[in-house]
Length: 73
Image 1: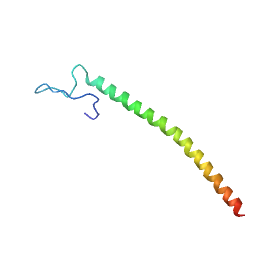
Image 2 (image 1 turned 135 degrees about the vertical axis):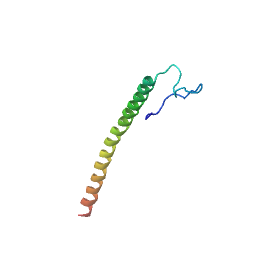
Image 3 (image 1 turned 90 degrees about the vertical axis):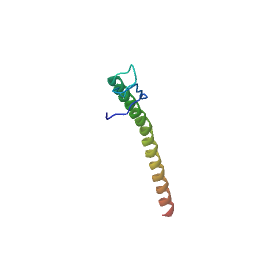
Image 4 (image 1 turned 180 degrees about the vertical axis):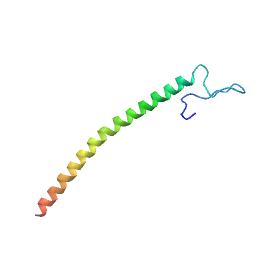
């Protein structure tokens, strides 16, 4: 299928599916979706504060540039 499996593949013989015993394909897809949502949420949580930090750094650099320009005049 077109998704990443969270569980190890167990094969017991010819004609078996690539599923963990006792876990349906639907449950596996739901688990993958939950993990993907969690990773997306964590990524957003990391990037949002980074944007604030970069904005603050930009203001600091701008102030430093203004100070240098004022000192040169």
